[in-house]
Image 1 (cartoon, rainbow, N blue to C red):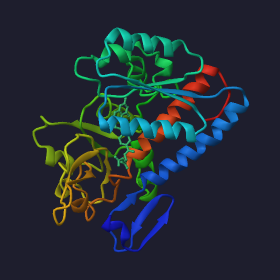
Image 2: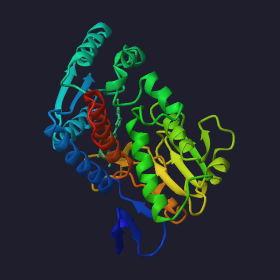
Image 3: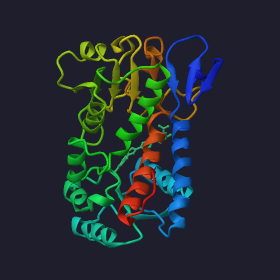
Length: 322
Ligand SMILES: Nc1nc(=O)c2c([nH]1)NC[C@@H]1CN(c3ccc(C(=O)N[C@@H](CCC(=O)O)C(=O)O)cc3)C=[N+]21
């Protein structure tokens, strides 16, 4: 990352490029901080006789999903959790999947159930997600958790991991720039149940003035240009251009898109990860920006661990501050 090789100062997970320009919010470092807190709290919880347990369910053989699921299992073990993974063949039927969910719902060693998405096309994720006990729904996708978030009951909701992680990074950016989210113009590009809608709810909970924009928005560039806080969650590589960013804006790039990278001297074709924001173009405009990779992605995994620990504490009825 060229922008980070220039002389930089790093204070509290924020990289300040020496030549000026956007502050870079270091999601890798923020995730390590969160994971360290989780590991410490887990030792406390284990000392009280409760070991948080996470079950990850993967259906089929999507290579990207296999990589994500592996890193979730690793993080769970590093946190001191009990961690199990179910690899089911792509041919698995809905009844078998529902039976596994019921078994995990009833298993006292399991406090978090993560159903890796997307499922193979034949399977309807809605029915399977709705079978997960809301108290173990660490993805925050069950309608009960979506509803608790919508009414602002964050003490009871399990909040989806990517939105929760995005807010941690946004808080870091706001603190570094002494920027008050209350009353600010926030624009979320993307309206998915997994990311766009829950982020909008969280921003509203902070008293931001929230616009949810999407592919049918008439003047997307003009809408983005109004944003003091711009959250990109569209899943299209570098769709948000630098000249769509209001000068000084806080930019949270949720996109993780694998695209072909130029290969040299006939070397095998390579790929690289880019966000939904044209990063290089935005550095001279944004006040702060999250990089891809190393931004929201690592935070997503850290928040999955946070949700699992929270679920365990609630299910176990422990009085542990977390
Ligand atoms: N039920 C469910 N819940 C999810 O949370 C969920 C899911 N299904 N399906 C797939 C997406 C994707 N996802 C990512 C998590 C971490 C990184 C991550 O750590 N990315 C690294 C780079 C990793 C790499 O190099 O490929 C980074 O951005 O720095 C990326 C993507 C969670 N997802």
